[in-house]
Image 1 (spheres, rainbow, N blue to C red):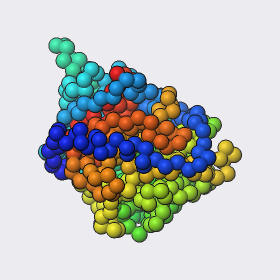
Image 2 (cartoon, rainbow, N blue to C red):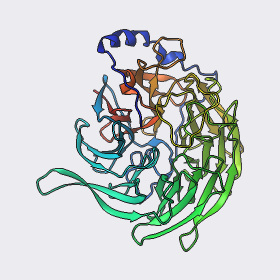
Image 3 (cartoon, rainbow, N blue to C red):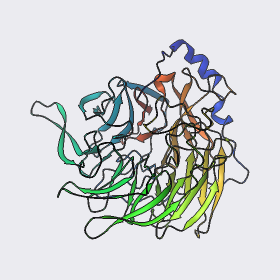
Image 4 (cartoon, rainbow, N blue to C red):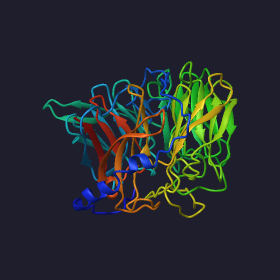
Length: 489
């Protein structure tokens, strides 16, 4: 992944901080009658073949709820540290032993590299290079129930990467198990997303629309191909009811036959618009599908479409695929597009806008955007599904410019993210000297309740990557050059 170069200047920070001190509230207008704080529960059930909920996957759990049971930075002064890894680090996970496991793409060479980070200060303890593949190949990974990173590398091999100390007491990363998927994944294709099912098998989807189920204990691999022309540009999600996959044309729920062969339970097409939009990485929905619901935590599946003028949140029943609602979102910001997975908890869904976000690189085959460029609009919308499941209603809609995938802490009812402010207040453009702020947001109102600048300039670009709350309360956020470690007290 190419990263624009910049040299942020420390002497600018006090001035920038002063200029943006009022922005914490300016972007969060809330309509009258906003709902009071609610309990955002339940969330998807724990997958017994995944690591701890909240930290096992990029989106928190295998249902991709983007929730965490951990609180995040608590009382006291907020501070941040940039762990420089000379890499873009989209996948920051934490196992049951508390050690962060980070999957990064170095700026130079772009060979995917696994880092094991120090518990105390976030420094890299040891690394392991993987075989290079496509830009999005290997970005999505998860931790299994033994804290091993499960990933498919550029050789099309399903790997389980463990970390342990050697005889001398030094930490090492090593491949515990490997299964070639070359018979199922063509040489010109790459695995985009993967997630375990409730039997310990691994579902995967490729950029060119192959969906498969692999068992690296037995060596069995079975696949099906989505209709011609459909690509998968985001990760996939698993629940006891099945596996949700959103292609560039439709959302699917897949299940496995008795012999382990994937089959389609239902398919729901969505409006993919006339072309890819600026701020999105593919022509179609930018969503990893989200499981949520008020009874089991997986009653519904939610995505955001790619309609031309105004995008819509689409919510379907997991059982059968019937549409619950199709409701406009991100209207306050006027930015019709989201590359981020929605947050889902109980009956509530949160959608962050990415329209116009300036990515330094695009995946192969992304195609031109229409228009060719746009200002970063941002926007954050909360939608609630009616308790009887007959439709949805907007609770609030604001213009907050989240530069990362937000996370919802169900321990404190707090949204966490990093926002990208314009260098000149009141403008909408982006530049290499933009300041970045960690913020906490009240999910009941959409208002920022706490804010701390984390850096100025492109070294701090969070590139719409997901943050992770660690068990020690630190908020770990990948950037184009490493990981931010945000703490309090």
